[in-house]
Image (cartoon, rainbow, N blue to C red; front, side, top):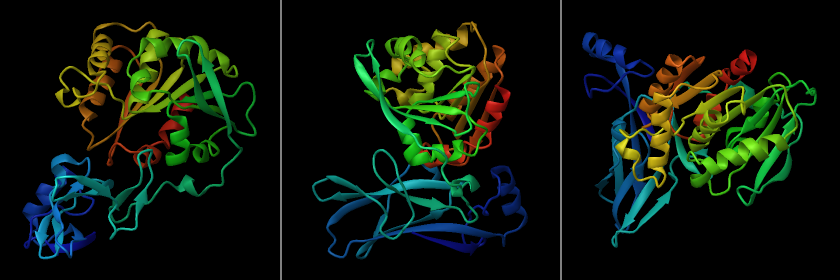
Length: 357
């Protein structure tokens, strides 16, 4: 993968770091504006591949198909309007079978529960400053039994060395993944003293998809089993965010604030999500949120990537929450649905939520 800069009169491409509304004006007023393009190259010296595709979540912002050029496959395109994105190469052989790999020409990697991905970062991208801090305290791995779920949930228990019985408790869905792929515990060590329970799921797609059974288990068994705290804040991403919000609506006293990243707040209009087995259950719940008044309003921070398919649903939920009296705000980040995006967008929003609570 190579990023190259060209004069705008050679190829119409957006200037680096310009906002979309500014781009059109700049290109119209100055035909010599420098622009950036990105090039992907994969060698196929024996011509064994039938196709090579770029697997990413940017949709029409970046092409997917590489073109054969002699004994290699190539793709050249304008840089998309994102701060970074993750991708893999899909290699398709003559039998039509696919194999996904990281880009051998690109050393940058991002980890995740389903394996590594290659990463493109725009010039000037820098990771959060807090990543360089030394971790504070140690997390203890435990299991939390649930009679309702007939399972034991894995969890990490952590506390700042200066935390007391009056310190808040952060409850995190997909907690071990947040620790491993988003360096959450490193950030928590830099915040005012608090305690944290990082919950891992069992049968994630089932229990995190607006499940009444899981909501009961969390509110009646899991949260009461934790160390008491004057304030309890929930943090989750994707389905994990949805599940926290679902618990709040069923049991209003369960949480005092929520931080919901890239929440899977599916609506019946979101036909692109209908493949998900529990789509209908989620859509019914979200529809009820739009119709029904809450028993209790709490501060809620929403975050979502500008390239995510569920951004419209997150925008709609923020509007609904505000209309229903919640202190709610949505922040959008120039990235996608991944653990580094959620890592980069934790601060300062989590700190502000803790201060508000």
